[in-house]
Length: 221
Image 1 (tube, rainbow, N blue to C red):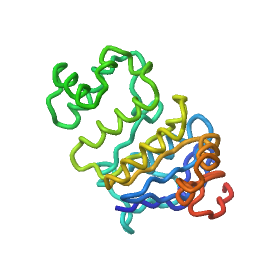
Image 2 (image 1 turned 135 degrees about the vertical axis):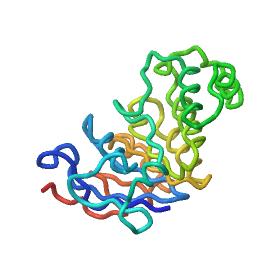
Image 3 (image 1 turned 60 degrees about the vertical axis):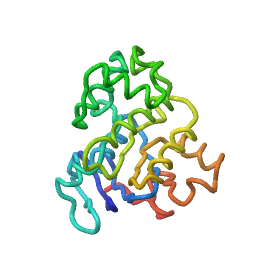
Image 4 (image 1 turned 90 degrees about the horizontal axis):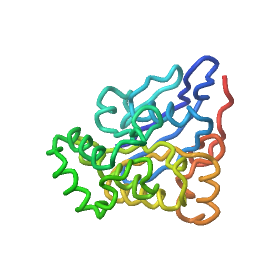
């Protein structure tokens, strides 16, 4: 699958999201840059088919995106939308996600899933206290359990701290498993990734105001 956003914008005078173009597709991890508190979530909502832009277009495999985009893309850890309350136990979060995936969601099943992924130590730990890399890995693994999910949109993993290379490696791992992966993060994290491993995310990295393959960002309308 290939999802393309062409000059999408949101809000009065495009303040919520200025005109932005980005594409992501199966088998590749793409990094997009979005700054300010709200723009990463707005971009994530649009990229996953959960919000209509006020301007621009969203296409899925070359056709105007429909409700099927929302069913096929998992929106992960988007602040104030799909992130977990920080005081909820990890086993509780796992149980809820297993329920969404149509799997047994009782505490025993949730703890068994944590055991299978070497995360049992966090069973009673509030999700807000789980280290960034383990939190993100857990949420990605749970997301792909949902029937029909072909793509993943991970929002602001850099807000949890830690080394950006860790969550970028996870994004590439899931892309290697065939998923279309879009990660939305800040400029500082992108700078660190390009400086530390210029040959890794360089071709798919979107620096300076969300670019696609080096294209110039469009001016706000």
